[in-house]
Length: 108
Length: 120
Image 1 (tube, rainbow over the protein chains, first blue to last red):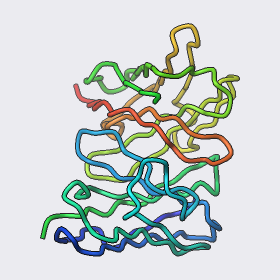
Image 2: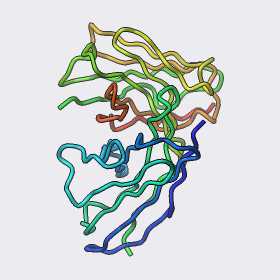
Image 3: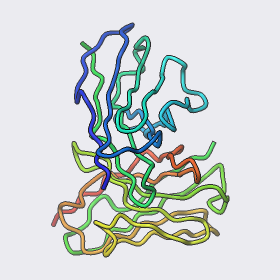
Image 4: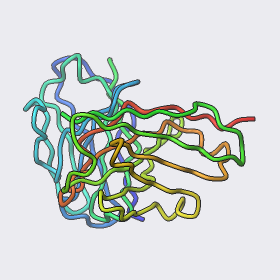
């Protein structure tokens, strides 16, 4: 299995902050990396696919970067609606997709 | 915009079979270019991919669950189904149905999820 880790697990932040979340794969996955946002009781939402491509309709303050084993999700200026948990997911091995443990962006 | 809605019993007894349905609206489950997947999240834990099915009927399952799981589609009802046999408390989770985009391999649509508790 390809193991995914994320850091930090919790991220206290304020509106307007620049937020960076890291995701690491246990082996190289090229750019087969997707990011999701999840709010309690709601459907998870795709933000970024293929490491850096912005899903249609997602605000441009979200961006992704990285390749190989190390990836980053950045929110350039945190908005009130961005407080949520963020997950990375590898799609390199399509017969066994795996997700990171999540990073909860919380109000500082 | 495709929408997915999971349904099924919220409580299942140990050793019994968990059966969930996902109703797809706003798009056909028979559309090429997509696969239909189940993903679960144990309380306070990671998301775990269970498996997926193409409209053609081909299926792929997580090896850790393969012996107990079946995913199927009913194209006449535009529904996806999950069957998980011989459940234990470890199968307590929120279950999500999702649509995956073939060739890009991301999940672009998710249901809101349904909590299934395994308990006597």
